[in-house]
Image (cartoon, rainbow, N blue to C red; front, side):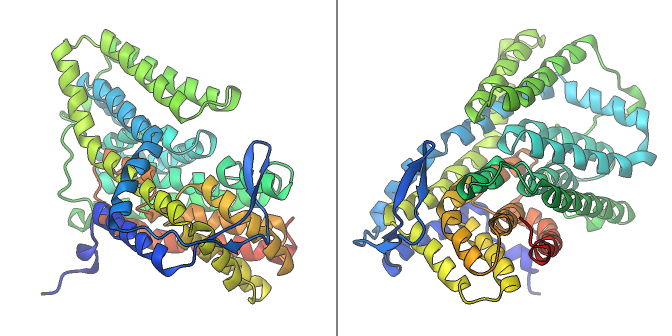
Length: 461
């Protein structure tokens, strides 16, 4: 009997190793080339029309593997926020704070409101993605796991509510500085202008995500054996006693207050103090220290809980470093600009509507190689915006096409370190996630492309 397609999906580790080797081979097959760049407001910006070939610098096998340390060095901020989040939650888990709070909340609401809670949580995580960013929210993922399991769901549903909601909203956010903000700076447009259409596309994407989660939950309740997440390790995440036996102790309230205060500082600081990822890591560590000192746990218990969480997060941090290595190899082989130039050439002969969708599709493919939204923006938009204008597309439309291509495909991008780390926190293997996320990605792309075609039709500017 042949295995189903999803059983043949390799792990992210194997997928990324294949991508690394493929990109290494591309440094031999593609001509090396560069755009000229100038410094504008402290950022290096591509000069349109300045692409030129340079002396080839292909990487041999030793060079490819020597790029790994540079990739891990570049990925250090993301790796560390993952570890800081794991340490912080290890204390909340060891003291049963999250379990007691979730048990009490679910017992108060009752299972009859389960679908409403799924929709609300999808939008809450979406709001976090819009307002706080992506990796900054990694610490909140285990909460969804405990809640969804308490409602009779599984870890796939938990990932759909938290990771799905956050990824969709972050990717399509009308105020995403990494994509929209950088695009507007490059195009000299008012920051976050054209927000109304982007807000409609984002809200529609979140509604689709919430409907998809509820649909999966209904299927799971009707036939538990049909669940994609069956057999996954839920130890430490399931409620350990009947709902009517849960109560929140004074110590639980204190630890929850410290945790929520830390999240509040991050949320406020992102807007008021322009906090970045290392600042968020520092806040998570401070929350962990305060919680550990006031948890009532012994030093040995704190240490064991922390090491257990780090061990669970370690595979994801290893994969994050591998993902960053891909962009290092592209830079060392000087083929990143060559690929951007080739994409622009491929789009140059298309009709207006087709070129808008084609630009989005091209960015989707490039997203596998350059998962950084700001990195993609700086590498491609200075070329795509003038090309779009030559094809009859306003700069706003080119930026929207870029945002859709980058944002929606983040749902299944093995090169996106934050996604891999969040799935690891939720204990969801990548192949299981793909079974859940790929049909959804197709629906979201169709919805977003409708918005893009409307933008072309109305002359969105």
